[in-house]
Amino acid sequence: MRRCSRTACTAEAVATLTYDYADSLAVLGPLSFTREPHSYDLCARHADRTSAPRGWQIIRHVTLGEVGFTA
Image (cartoon, rainbow, N blue to C red):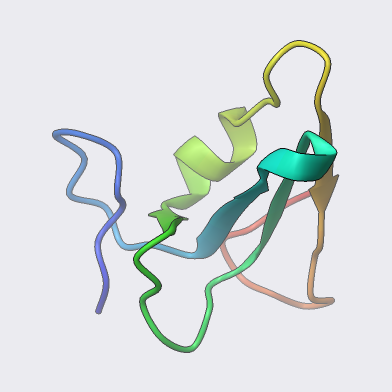
C-alpha cells in the first residue's frame, strides 16, 4: 500500500498527480502502477480537493467503477 504524498497524511493513495510545466497542465488520474519520482500519489480526499495553479489546466482521468476516486 502506498501512502498519500501530502505532508502528515497517512491515508492510502488512490490517485497520481503529474505536472507538465511546458504546457501548464496538471494531470490527475488513477494510481500509477509504480511510484514515480516526479509525481504525487494522493488519497481520495486530497485528489478531490486538488486544483490547478492559476493559468493552468487540470485534466482528471477517471476509471469507471474505481472505488475511492471521484471526478
